[in-house]
Image 1 (cartoon, one colour):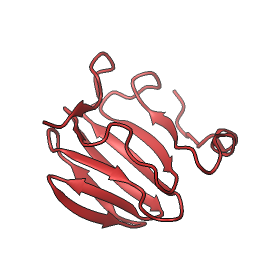
Image 2: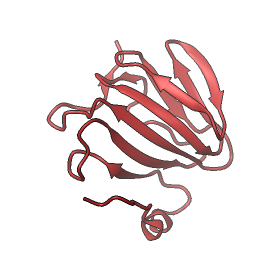
Image 3: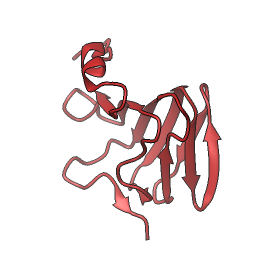
Image 4: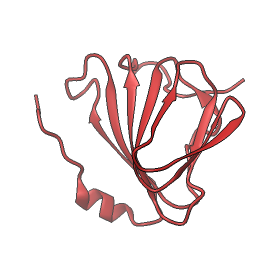
Length: 124
């Protein structure tokens, strides 16, 4: 078990400034039993690859840098550094970076998503 985990800065740099980068810090393959944690950098103009979608688990974002644009149940929001964003299971949402600088956030998913089930489902 790795008790201290860090972002792979070389991989972030290799992805380049205009590429979305995602790194799992905790999931079912690294000892997670109750939740997963993902570090995500989204370039200006980028967004959630699934578009408007839902999850069968709760998803929580903690914004570290930049300003994230969000649509949750048809209402738009902006969340800057220090913001906590909560997407309860089953709630349609999407996120994107409408600014000129990258956004960086931690995504917590609880309970731990089942790796045999698609994580994001199109919103209906």
